[in-house]
Image (cartoon, rainbow, N blue to C red; front, side):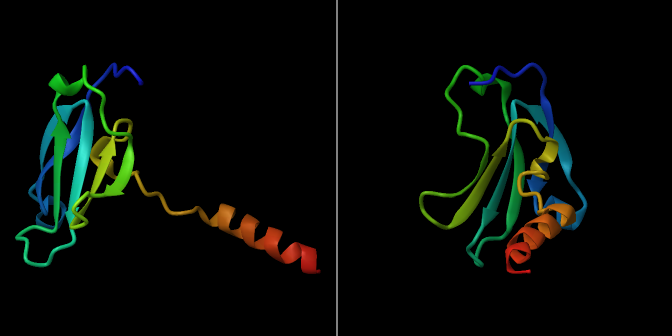
Length: 106
Protein backbone atom coordinates (compact mmCIF):
# COMPACT_ATOMS: atom_id res chain seq x y z
CA UNK A 1 0.00 0.00 0.00
CA UNK A 2 1.25 3.46 -0.85
CA UNK A 3 2.24 5.74 2.01
CA UNK A 4 0.64 9.14 1.70
CA UNK A 5 2.84 12.15 2.35
CA UNK A 6 0.41 14.99 1.72
CA UNK A 7 -3.28 15.56 1.93
CA UNK A 8 -5.65 16.06 -0.95
CA UNK A 9 -8.03 18.98 -1.18
CA UNK A 10 -11.47 17.56 -1.88
CA UNK A 11 -14.90 18.92 -2.63
CA UNK A 12 -17.40 18.57 0.19
CA UNK A 13 -21.15 18.80 -0.32
CA UNK A 14 -24.11 17.34 -2.17
CA UNK A 15 -24.69 18.37 -5.80
CA UNK A 16 -22.20 21.13 -5.05
CA UNK A 17 -20.84 21.28 -8.60
CA UNK A 18 -24.32 21.98 -9.94
CA UNK A 19 -25.14 24.52 -7.22
CA UNK A 20 -21.69 26.10 -7.17
CA UNK A 21 -21.52 26.02 -3.38
CA UNK A 22 -18.76 23.48 -2.81
CA UNK A 23 -16.79 23.64 0.40
CA UNK A 24 -13.34 22.09 0.70
CA UNK A 25 -11.98 19.47 3.05
CA UNK A 26 -8.58 17.83 3.23
CA UNK A 27 -7.80 14.22 3.95
CA UNK A 28 -6.06 11.11 2.76
CA UNK A 29 -8.43 10.60 -0.20
CA UNK A 30 -11.32 12.20 -2.08
CA UNK A 31 -14.64 10.38 -2.41
CA UNK A 32 -17.38 10.93 -4.99
CA UNK A 33 -20.74 9.20 -4.48
CA UNK A 34 -23.36 9.08 -7.22
CA UNK A 35 -26.87 7.79 -6.60
CA UNK A 36 -28.73 5.86 -9.30
CA UNK A 37 -32.07 6.26 -7.48
CA UNK A 38 -34.22 9.10 -8.69
CA UNK A 39 -36.02 9.43 -5.36
CA UNK A 40 -32.84 10.61 -3.58
CA UNK A 41 -32.59 14.33 -2.87
CA UNK A 42 -29.05 14.58 -4.23
CA UNK A 43 -27.60 12.82 -7.27
CA UNK A 44 -23.92 13.38 -6.42
CA UNK A 45 -22.11 13.96 -3.13
CA UNK A 46 -18.44 14.66 -2.45
CA UNK A 47 -16.37 14.34 0.70
CA UNK A 48 -12.90 13.46 1.92
CA UNK A 49 -11.59 10.41 3.76
CA UNK A 50 -10.16 11.61 7.11
CA UNK A 51 -6.51 11.30 8.09
CA UNK A 52 -7.46 8.83 10.85
CA UNK A 53 -8.12 6.15 8.20
CA UNK A 54 -4.44 5.96 7.17
CA UNK A 55 -3.58 2.94 9.37
CA UNK A 56 -6.37 0.85 7.84
CA UNK A 57 -6.48 -1.11 4.61
CA UNK A 58 -8.33 1.24 2.28
CA UNK A 59 -10.40 0.56 -0.82
CA UNK A 60 -8.43 0.61 -4.08
CA UNK A 61 -8.50 3.76 -6.16
CA UNK A 62 -11.12 3.98 -8.88
CA UNK A 63 -14.88 3.69 -9.31
CA UNK A 64 -17.14 0.76 -8.50
CA UNK A 65 -20.87 0.16 -8.13
CA UNK A 66 -21.97 -0.13 -4.52
CA UNK A 67 -22.81 -3.56 -3.11
CA UNK A 68 -26.50 -2.69 -3.10
CA UNK A 69 -26.34 -1.58 -6.75
CA UNK A 70 -28.00 1.75 -6.11
CA UNK A 71 -24.98 3.98 -6.62
CA UNK A 72 -21.37 4.39 -7.70
CA UNK A 73 -18.47 5.16 -5.37
CA UNK A 74 -15.26 6.74 -6.67
CA UNK A 75 -12.17 6.96 -4.46
CA UNK A 76 -9.02 8.77 -5.50
CA UNK A 77 -5.76 9.03 -3.62
CA UNK A 78 -3.68 10.96 -6.14
CA UNK A 79 -6.10 13.33 -7.92
CA UNK A 80 -7.65 16.29 -6.17
CA UNK A 81 -11.44 16.45 -6.22
CA UNK A 82 -11.89 13.05 -7.95
CA UNK A 83 -12.14 14.85 -11.28
CA UNK A 84 -9.54 12.74 -13.07
CA UNK A 85 -10.79 9.25 -12.34
CA UNK A 86 -12.38 8.73 -15.73
CA UNK A 87 -10.37 10.55 -18.31
CA UNK A 88 -11.66 10.40 -21.87
CA UNK A 89 -9.41 8.82 -24.49
CA UNK A 90 -7.33 11.52 -26.07
CA UNK A 91 -7.90 12.27 -29.73
CA UNK A 92 -4.38 11.21 -30.75
CA UNK A 93 -4.75 7.79 -29.11
CA UNK A 94 -8.14 7.34 -30.77
CA UNK A 95 -6.71 8.20 -34.21
CA UNK A 96 -3.76 5.87 -33.67
CA UNK A 97 -6.09 3.00 -32.75
CA UNK A 98 -8.31 3.73 -35.75
CA UNK A 99 -5.30 3.76 -38.09
CA UNK A 100 -4.07 0.45 -36.62
CA UNK A 101 -7.44 -1.14 -37.35
CA UNK A 102 -7.69 0.19 -40.91
CA UNK A 103 -4.03 -0.21 -41.99
CA UNK A 104 -4.07 -4.03 -42.42
CA UNK A 105 -6.89 -3.72 -44.97
CA UNK A 106 -5.12 -1.21 -47.23
